Length: 338
Image (cartoon, rainbow, N blue to C red):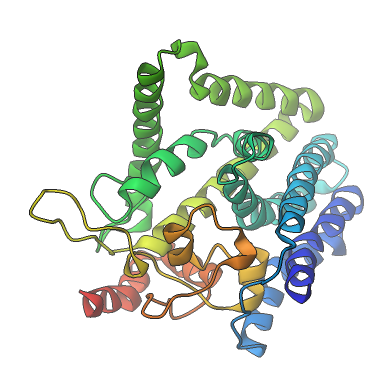
């Protein structure tokens, strides 16, 4: 129960802060920004422990938290778009709210949607898909499950960053490559089961994105629509930063058969920090997730021998935005593993 309280506290505290920030602005915006950045980093440093996997039979509570987070995501999105659109916060307040919301969506909503698309229950999967669609990134629901998990740490995976590849060069390759690869995989799946291409979820991704854009324009006018696009773009960048950092330079050996070796603990970077881990629903325990994609997030752990990042995932993602510094820190670590 202690672990579940940590997940709940870490992920839900920003929700009322963001809602109040959208309504009142001022110090509430600063409070969200501090919580998502400085406070998270400070707590990670002060409490240098790895929270153990949550053991017990209460895993449905993990799904309940994911549902609450997803519904809160949609409510916050509408509230923020309306607040910026009405212009009551001023330019500085609006920009601060956009950044704060983008940070929360990028670190919590992305992690939660990722968890949901791996759940077996169709309603949960669809809920995660629509969170991604609301961030104009619906194709990730297909590309992540059908491509990334199968081809991770190989050249066939657009989401795996190559050794020496800077983040800003990675972004267009990863975004476009994942979109195309996911589309091909969905078309092949429909052909195998004999379904019409109108059943392709990409129809839903595109139509849903357009619907969210129109809703943002109706709710917040041009300013609210611009805020929505900025928040979605920022959230997408953070998701790609996570993929970039967690697989940078790691590759699977190709066997004589021409097929890659099985995915193992050595093919993902991990981060053991307790608070940012809770904030991101244990997404930084990435090797275990790839080994057991359907395993609920409270049960994830860091396996012996799994590569560990020198700092927390949010800290390393920040460093990754400065490619020369990133390569100075990480390239030698990658080479030491090969």
